[in-house]
Length: 208
Figure 1 (cartoon, rainbow, N blue to C red):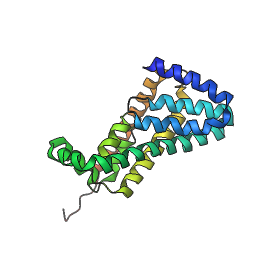
Figure 2: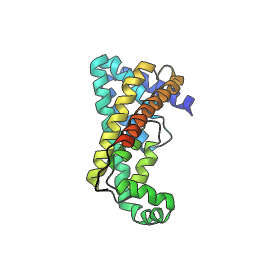
Figure 3: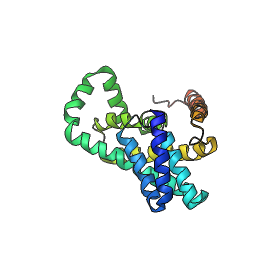
Figure 4: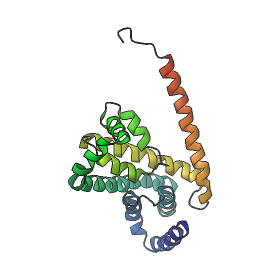
């Protein structure tokens, strides 16, 4: 699968270099397609976008455009899926999900007051964002809340992949994805430690 993707990207790279006007559209298009097809590796696609945009527009401008356009493309793809599922499948599947023990837990988390927990889950670049989007589309969460969660999580993921992806050079050294994953896990572990420590030592409300 990866060999096929790299082969396609290699041919695509030559096309973009010959037609530089297509680079911004490509930067939107690739994350858009990834949002529709869960099996595509977003890390590699963002690395490709960054490489192309930096080559054509320079490091600073190329990096900024990669973050902006990749976030836009990813968000539009997820929004399209959300609308399609909401209009067609959501009424049928929402009932089935609510009857399942774990499905009900997910619904309670998504539709409850704690937005931060869902945002943390959706901002994980190593979780299948497309599948999370399918699940979120089946809930009764408001469109306003969905837009906030999706735009914010996509921006966080794209920034993470762009800056750390450039450091680890994912496009030319795909095995560095492992180092990227370890780095993310370390950051998450540090955050969880301080969050757990804060909750443990948080002064209790006398009225509770």
